[in-house]
Image (cartoon, rainbow, N blue to C red):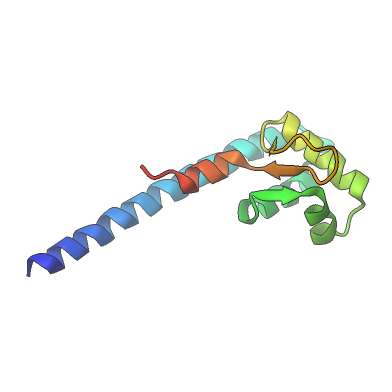
Length: 113
């Protein structure tokens, strides 16, 4: 009987951690939404990109080109805007094949608290 209690407690603890992380992700999405409102001209386009990075938090410019059927230069300029807003960060120092990361989402879901 004790092992059942143990496993149920593990399920409860795991569920509580999942709920906590989801709340943190929702809070991050809200923070991002507020930042995007400041960029009225491109807010819709940037919002779609932000939804994309929620499921693909590490990406390259070409990933956005393929996903949104936009030019490389357009995708690059939008990512530059997201970098300026502290939504994504550049993950390497290469000029070509730059890798970007939505580090806050990665931290939320990789944290082993």
